[in-house]
Length: 300
Figure (spheres, rainbow, N blue to C red):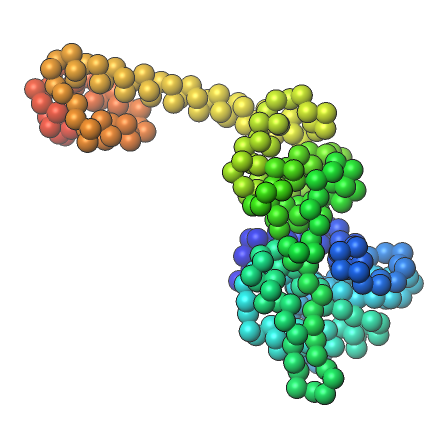
C-alpha cells in the first residue's frame, strides 16, 4: 500500500501537472515540446495490460492532441519489480497516446535516487531504459520568495528533498510567500508537508517567524493557523500551569511533614498528567504517615 509520503508527492503533480514538464525541462535539460495544456490523467494501464500493473501518474501535454507524455513514478525505496514494470509503463503509454513518452522517477532520498538512476537492460539489443531522475542532485533548492510564489509545489518538493540539509533554513524562509493566494486546505497540507521535511533548526525558525506576526508575506492562512495554535497553546499552558502548581504544593506538603521525597517518587509524581489524581494525592498528603501510604488505594 502506498505510504502517506508517497501519496503526498503524487498530490504535488496532480495539483500542478506542469511540474513534471518543468522538472524535465529546467532541472534535467530535456527538450519538451510547446503545449497549451498539461493534464494529470489516470495511470491505469488497461487494454492489453493486466490490471495489476499501474503507474503512479501520467501527465499529458496537449496541443489539440497529445504532444508528449510523462509517466511519473514516485520511488521511496528500491523495488526490483520496477525494473520489469517501468519499461512496460513506458511502451504501453507510447502506443496508447501515439506520442513521445518518457519516464520521470521522483526519488527525494539520495540512496534511493542512486538506485533508480541505474540503466535497465531489457535484454533486447539497443533497448536500454535509463529513467529521467528527479533526485536531490536535480531537484532545485527553492529559497527566493518569487520562486515560491510561481511554483509552490516545486517549493514543497524542494523541502522534501533538501529540508534536512544545511539549506533547510533558507527553504523555510520561502514557505510563506508560496502559500499566499492558494486555498486554505491546500496551504495547510503543503505547510504540514514542509514542516515534516525540515530539520529541527529550520522548523523552529519557521514557527517563530509565523508567530511573530510581522513577516511581510504573512498570509491569511498563516494568521488563522497560528491564531488557532496560540489559542490551543494558551489553553494547554493554563492546564499545564495548574498541574505544576498542584505538583509543587504536593512536594511542599510532604517536605513540611518530614516525608522526604526521593528521586523515584518525584519522577512518579512529575509523570502524572491527571489533574484529579494530583489533587487526590495532595489531599492525602496532609495525613499519610509514609510515601508508600500516599500511593496506596484509598479504602472504600
